[in-house]
Each structure stands twice: as C-alpha cells, then as structure tokens.
Image 1 (spheres, rainbow over the protein chains, first blue to last red):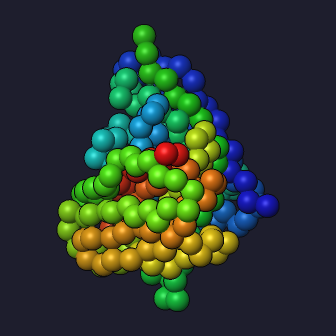
Image 2: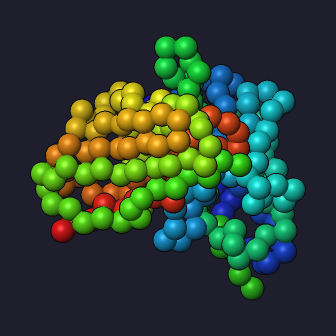
Length: 124
Length: 107
C-alpha cells in the first residue's frame, strides 16, 4: 500500500525556518518525481515545488523561490522541504504527493498519491 | 507562469443535477489539464488527466473536455458523495499551477 506521511509542521516565528519531511512507503521511491502542494486555511491548493528522481531538476512556485528548497534522500525514502524567511502568508497545510506519468505516451503527469498533510503556522 | 482561472468559485446543486465547472488557462496548454476532487479535511484525489481521460476507479458520471485554453468538468448526475471542492491543474509546464477551485454545495 502506497503511503506518504508528512511531519515537521508546527509553529514558526515570522522570519524563521522550518523543515518538513515526507516519508514514503509501499512503492519504489527512486522511480518517481515528488511534489509539495500547500493549502492555506479555507483557501485553494497552491503548487509549491517538485523534483525529479535524482535531484537534478527542481522547480519552484514564484511565491517561494529563493526561500524554500526541496530535496530528497532516496536511501531513506524521504522528501524534504526546507522553508526559510517564513511569513504569515506561508501558513498552510503542506501536502507531499507522488507524481506519475500517465497516458499512452507517458507524456502526462498526475499527482496520484498524497499524504494527509502537516500544518505550518507562522505567527509571533 | 501559467494562470488558471476557474468558474464559478462555488455553486449549489441538488442530487441528480448536471453540473459543469469551467477552467481557463492564460495561454494554450494543449490538453495538459488535470482535475482533482477534494473533500473537507482530506487530500485531493485525481479524477481526470489529459483533459478528458478518466483516472482508474473514477465513476463514469465524471467527464472532462477541452483543449487549448478552455476546459470543462461535467458531473452528469450529482451524487451525495460528490459534494466537494474541485480544482483544475495544468501539467503543460513547470512550475505547475492550480485553479482557484470550485466548491459544490448542497442546495
């Protein structure tokens, strides 16, 4: 059974840092791109960042570029999100998700499995 | 980045109704468009990819159409378990982006 479990959320001070983790099980972690998506309280989904299998490709939303860093440790089946210079606007539930290629040609991708999320609150 | 605009932001409907949600991209994304359903307090679930392909296990009352910049998600006969929020997502280019969401509520 595919499982993604996020951890590391909590209360952070404005300007502070936090590191989120996502532990994967039930599938071959090294075969998949992985993504972080967040959702502010009562708001919609916001795509945050993703990376490929070996870490050679990483992409970020403009809203977090230069402040957040995505990484992974394939030996530990884990995905990370280092968040620096936090502000109140970063308050959200953060989900990690597995990306899978679909379609006959494999040219489409979906986030097919998601964790339950970890809440990050930025407040003084 | 590509902007995705959904409408309406919310709607009220009854069980058995036909419901249509639209999504517009700020530039052509061919058919690189996914639809997700999210129930309250839960993680999103993918319904449709490539604009019109039904993800395995998703009921056939869900369908998608469109290409280029304009897309629709249709629920042919709304069921009680369909009351949720729906999001479109472009997978044409990275960074990916979601639409603002449509909340489907009980009338």
